[in-house]
Length: 471
Image (tube, rainbow, N blue to C red; front, side, top):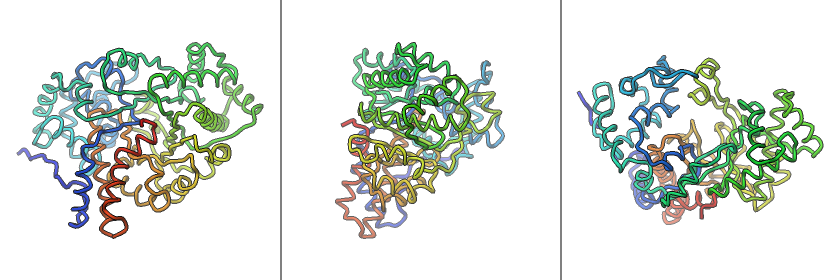
């Protein structure tokens, strides 16, 4: 028997009637504000080519590590989900992949993935029955049919979603040809890039030595020398700025920073380039490069994002067979107070530098992050990220950081997603959770409702534009 799928108007709002009424009023004022998506991993080729998306499995399952990590945890082989082992072609039929996913959709009950996907099913594809084994083919056929229409092409969806600006994320080695194609097309959508230097600043990144050579080829700089290497990075940053970049992004294992004297930096770089650095020296080099990147940001104005604390590709067998980013990244405890001190000693009191801190370690919210951002002018707190991009994660964030950092040392919301279809769903969750948190403050007589409305608009729209210099 098929079961009805519907989105309740009061989802994620407080159970208390008084608070719920306030949340409804606040949400009504922010629900239709434009989406500003300042950090994510959507493919700029989608908007450059504006071709039709592929089949439902390719669009909604295969790129989404949230989905296949859960399915893998239940013993479902990644090959059966359409993932290809390195050097091989997948033999899984896409409809079979979808049927397998549908028959296990119950695994996502209570998770953010089900909230996002149900939103997409109802709002984007007008489905009104729940996804399960019985309705799998109905879903597949409906979605596949819609994806052939012009109004489901990337640019049309961008406009339908009321996106004002969307940032992708690229390596310094990317030629940004897709961003150039977007510009040349004359389309009015604003898709910009962000500078992610990990492949050329992390000695433990796959192919690091070759990446440095490629960086030198791109820039004409001697990337085997310390100064030539720094010059090459600055040159690429300027190139990214020409394509709208307002931010850098750093996915280091830890938040460690260092401030070596020039001679020590040259010696460390020589060991790294020579392939003679050990794990401790690789960490020191990454730490030094965060400080170097802060110096460059002070000079060129790019906002600096630090995303530490993930043990990436933890499952060695999956990594060897399928490669990076296959759902086996695990959060780690992360120190910020000691780790950031070298950078803060040098730049922490600047008013022309902006550093946005993210965490996968929620224990650091009230103890470290809120207190640091509540003092140092350069620091702001990014929203709950990755595993904590959830209603509970957002509530914990507001509860733990607001009393010390306030609302205005945070930067609104960003979706950080590869799944383009889910962008409005993720922003809707954030708006509802923030309105619920503010409604509680209003009903506890801690904040007047007119001020709560100002904050709701700021959290939804104004703060993110200010923090990422889109205004």
